[in-house]
Image (cartoon, rainbow, N blue to C red):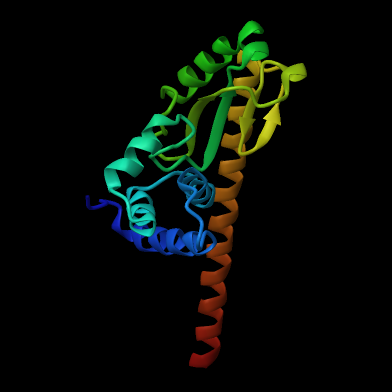
Length: 189
């Protein structure tokens, strides 16, 4: 069961082991798995293996439990994690249309991540904001009374923010290069 994502695997394994230290003497498997997922944003294979070792039970038992409950994610979420509520109030107020709008605009289905890893999309049960139905939660920020036009507006806002971030990064790199050049020119005099 080797993980293909080697650059991140070592860091993730370290986080998993640190997380398990908090559970010393405890045998609450589901809480352990949720804690690992809270730290990493998902439940990696190496996390399940470490929990199996820690609890001295088989990896298949851990995997069976983790796949039984739908709150566990097995792929890293995107930089911006979008959760569309499909609880009763959101469902009645056409939350499915909001979910379809996200799928169409992001060109992914629920449970998937965009190719650039910028967005992930998840369908969730009630988030407890029924008065605001239908609701979308983006990076833990609640967006209420959603409709397809709001989806477009939110994505435009993120796109503009990303463009600003790219522009600031380029300007910063340019200033750093100029500063280095001036510093070197001063030494060469």
